[in-house]
Amino acid sequence: MSSLNAKQESAIGVFDSGMGGLTVLSALTQVLPQEKFVYLGDTARLPYGTKSKTTVERYALQAAGLLVQRGVKALVVACNTASGMALPSLQAAFANLPIFGVVEPGAQAAAQVADDSGILVLATETTIRGGAYQQALAGLLKGSRVPIYGRSCPLWVTLAEQGRQSWTLTEAVLKDSLRGFLSRGPKTILLGCTHFPVFAENLNTILPSGVNVVDSAQTTAKAVKAALTARDLLNRADGGSKEYGGPTEYFATDGADRFIQVGSTFLGAAIPQVQLIDI
Amino acid sequence: MSSLNAKQESAIGVFDSGMGGLTVLSALTQVLPQEKFVYLGDTARLPYGTKSKTTVERYALQAAGLLVQRGVKALVVACNTASGMALPSLQAAFANLPIFGVVEPGAQAAAQVADDSGILVLATETTIRGGAYQQALAGLLKGSRVPIYGRSCPLWVTLAEQGRQSWTLTEAVLKDSLRGFLSRGPKTILLGCTHFPVFAENLNTILPSGVNVVDSAQTTAKAVKAALTARDLLNRADGGSKEYGGPTEYFATDGADRFIQVGSTFLGAAIPQVQLIDI
Image 1 (cartoon, one colour):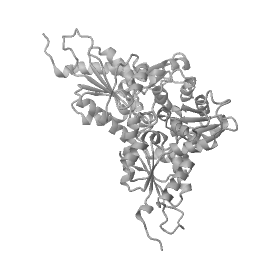
Image 2 (cartoon, helix red, strand yellow; image 1 turned 90 degrees about the vertical axis):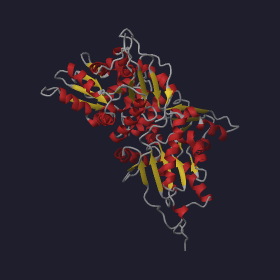
Image 3 (cartoon, chains in turn cyan, green; image 1 turned 120 degrees about the vertical axis):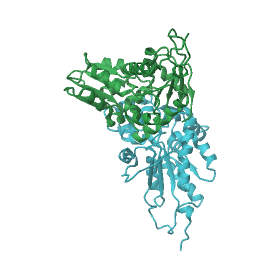
């Protein structure tokens, strides 16, 4: 006999400026198949990565507030810009809620495979300028001699949101962003933006062999699972035999049709329905 | 002896999703040197050109509301997406205010120089999909055989807002957008986005000789002057000898430093100061 627990059966909220966070949602549903998820993409105000810290904090607080109103038991900030800029504000505003960013897990994934050739962080302008990844990596690699490099890739988000993986100029744009790093460069590349994993195949073509490309999706999903286990917040209403937490609910602040069409390339699966919501 | 008239001395409000509208402001200050201007760039929510009609209407009403609160005597919607999508809503909401868009003047500029080879409208996704330019041109060219083509150029706004006119890949991106039109194409190209005039030199390199590139900045400025003259709303507080309406006030919803830096390339002049404002 299992006792129902409203908290454990609640959904996990996931938010991003747009559709990039669906790469993180995909990893979460694989690692936590018994959980229900609510995803919010703030597509009316994307991109976040060219905007200031103050504005990113304000938008993140509003988006998180909407998910909290829907009774989520935990929040995943599936956006590197918002994770790097707004995590302390979110944790202060919603003190009773477990809140997870993607920066620390991404930095851990990179630090685990890095060698002395170094780590190159590719991210938005705001993330690189804010330095959250560089700080997290420096903390994890203290005492080592692994050099840390950062490069902002402002056009990659536009290309990803446009679904331009197969466009004739995409690889030229990616190569241009990597100039100076392609030969004799760092052997670990950290994709510090949830949009960038859609370019995995393009990067595979461009990069020399032996370069590890890591992103934060898998390590974030594992970190969320470990933390919810420790807090006894996992959904096990039916005693553990349930393997599917129910269909994910998708919300976007603009462009439901576009979300369904382009979002599926980020998620790697079809998105049946998206509800528009105002912030 | 001139009698002071508060209305005539009021500023003209100009707004855009970001900095592209500064190309229109530049033309306005040349055609109306005795006027004072207040410019608002909604940089916290740019770009508009990938967003839905509903969202563009909502943002335009909010931006216009801010300028109306500041007592402007007229409003110029210096954004093609907002002009094409939101002009009727703006005119309904602020019925006593003369409100000018850039679509009709741009269409007039193109129709004046067009020949039977046709007109190609280059604009954002939302503007092209909305069809405002195509409709305006069809109305102006009724009975003629001038074919009208439209092509959305979603990456151009990002490149322009990044100040990438001299980037190695910019001309390749522009050429890709023009594919199918470069040889034996229409001899009139209408830049249906206020960001695109910054690529004038690049287009000059790419396009075959004999192609006219027109934009809406000059014709919009002339239309505003004619309408304000007809309504006796021109600033002539000192009897007409005054040639300078005072420094333009600049407002942006995000990124004042970036606005000063990149905005000057759109304006073609230095921007001394930008005030941040919340919407």
